[in-house]
Length: 199
Image (cartoon, rainbow, N blue to C red; front, side, top):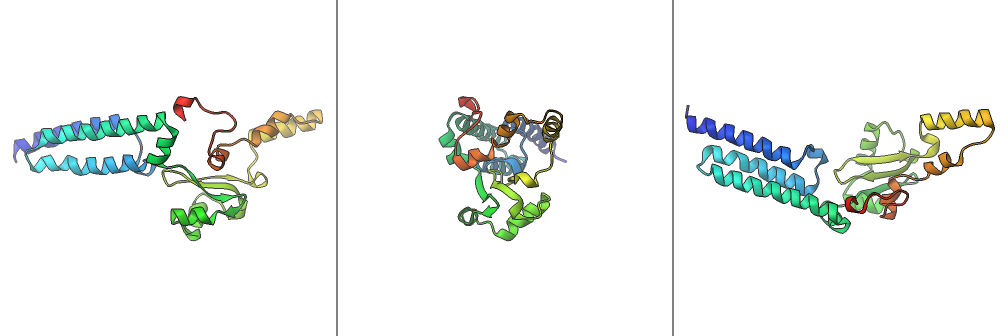
């Protein structure tokens, strides 16, 4: 066996592990489009120097790929507009229990495929949904209509308070109306906006 081949494989393994550690801990299903493209190109590029003489070129090109990924992520943190252009935004597919057909067509997502995803999440009917969105990573986010939601500890505490005192704390009711799905619908942060540098 060629010793040159062994040290190349070990070096590429070490450098590849270091680069992937720097680039982040997301799985393929959680990656944005730029991240997935860079990781696929990076994986393809890593195997080439094992059979050729260009190991140092590969290491430099790999570093450039990872640097490009870090710069892209930094740009997305600094600019909400550029984040939308580079990674996209969540798209509502159900609002108040009704399908948003225009968005389903835009995503090329059939009702059968949407129902398949909902069944996997334990949702029996589209009518049970208040809102459902297809997230940037392709996963489905949803909220159930208030009458279909399971009781939370907060709900039980409110019920106990109502039984004991005869009146309900209004802040509990107001908090129920604020959620992160309204950001997708209204295209801005309503209730408690995050720091501007992280939007």
